[in-house]
Image 1: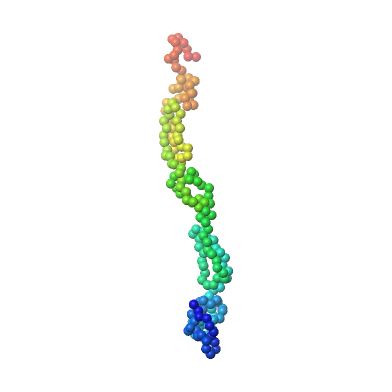
Image 2: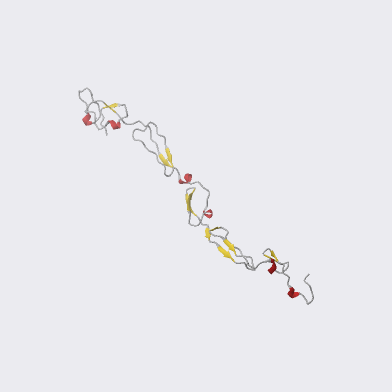
Length: 179
């Protein structure tokens, strides 16, 4: 701390510069002073006057350089809330299982299950691939029936969109014609 008191630059007593601790670095630029670094002579301060520094708000990863020197008033540097920096609408039910994200300030983990591809063989009954609410990672393949042609399906019968043209003579009596 600087000592206070009177000094007489032209001599005659008082406090001498060897008894003071203030130096030019702690006196505003351009102002005169007598201090520890002036050898009882008048010195000129070099501390920069930064004037008024406004309060600062920073997002994650941001920075603010606090300049050395004098600041005309106190100021604050505040971190913005995580919620204000992570606005979003995604929910865990819209993200893959195990994936994470920050949404509105909260960390969420996805819960959509993944489902690999599969092959379906035709049967006489309807089949359902249970893919609702799942993320498909492969194709669903329904095997074809290699001999499903109209000539192999009885006349007028519809099998999977194939309408038969085959005439079945096994039910005709001897001497009857199919048409």
